[in-house]
Length: 331
Ligand code: TYM
Image 1 (cartoon, rainbow, N blue to C red):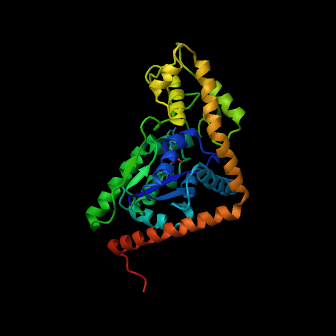
Image 2 (image 1 turned 120 degrees about the horizontal axis):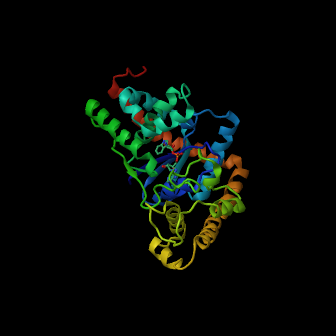
């Protein structure tokens, strides 16, 4: 079976529609046909300052949401990144193969370090993509389901794998990014020139755990475009196109079909119907997340068994990498 690995940060407490439509929906779909490893990346989270109690709570809430969305621990290994120290062991070796200039070119680092202001960015934020490469390569993953914004990190991962293989002999599988058609980049509802993100003001970001009236209000207030017709035109009508993309992804109807459906009707009708489609989808997810959080012991058992399966695979890779790197095995 092909191997799949992906990760998600726990930092906002709740995931958002971009995370779901860009990545998590594929996580769930891929479980049937692959051997999947999915992790909540708490080590990546601390590349920006975190409150410790909140990080712990958000990590559990993240795991509960993944299960509520359909990640099935019977078929996939679901775990917390810091429970598998092999990620860090491989990361160091990969750091020593990464060029300083190469890491400096990562656009996410440039964006995030700018937001932190002069002197605010840490070395951890700088080496973040190398840890991500280790997350993937330590499982010899074939496929990595992610949204469009992770494409550059996947390119780096492949470059590092190729470099290690070239220098020390064939060791790593070259992973491929699996980026969905259509929903690869969901836009912020208030600033449809930017991707939906937890780091923009919350009015433009539909969190999965928002109350239904909050969700409806955010969709009603979405920035649309001049004109009146409900048609997709990414260039001139990014706001309306984004709403159609979200509708299509959740309702399963094609964008062309939706354009027909809304012919002769205005943006208000589109928003009203989309709010229903989104809240119908989210209501059971929220309820199930809460149920799962109410049984913390069971949630922790799922994560422990996921980490155990993950460590079996990861430790075998690290053993090979250490041996090829020339480290003396402990007697
Ligand atoms: P993160 O936590 O920012 O996002 C999780 C996933 O959601 C996707 N995504 C989006 N997709 C479409 N539209 C959007 N507006 C949108 N916003 C986010 C992301 O592309 C991602 O797939 N570095 C990663 C986490 C990570 C990882 C890994 C991923 C760590 N190790 C190994 C894959 C493999 C990140 O910060 O994702």
